[in-house]
Length: 225
Ligand SMILES: [Mg+2]
Image (tube, rainbow, N blue to C red; front, side):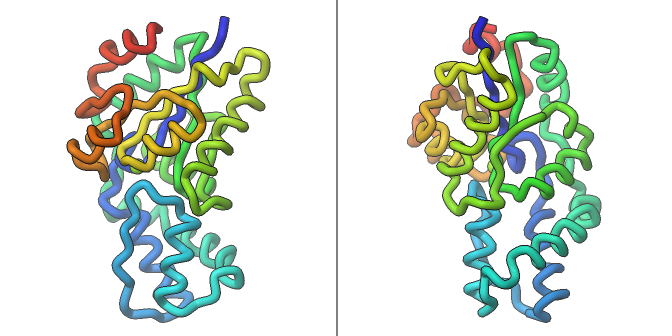
């Protein structure tokens, strides 16, 4: 029996954090560089590496010299920012994960633009970190397509012989999630709980588009689980 690999995005898909990541970045910029103005940067669906490249260019800091230092400080600031901004699970997420975790033919992973450590902090904050044992992250890649490749490779490593490249679903809230799913030949569910407008998601043609993750039965049927 082949295993279904389901790769979840985090921000806007599993959790809503009202900009906790951006808040922690802003605090970090202030602490490390004393920059009073935080530049306007679009963050939806992007990788942290790509966001930080743009951020450092905007404030005139060399990227390669400061990336590691910034990440360490950012991850120290993130827990308080998650508390301050009331980061929480989106509707239906916990029962869905519990149900999927029960299924023998399903394995759950992450496909997120977050730094790996930041992803773990965000998921631990809302108590769902234990559901995920592999994934692709935003530490190394500026392009989300490369994160998708990393996620699939880590799924293959974790699942072994039962892994099937034809049985991969990506679940995300932006057109970038849809684009990167196609890059690795995965099927994709778009949820309207985050950064993508209903119309923009429709235009990117996911296999399924749903308002949120509350109607589990509907898409479990789609997956024929
Ligand atoms: Mg997202």
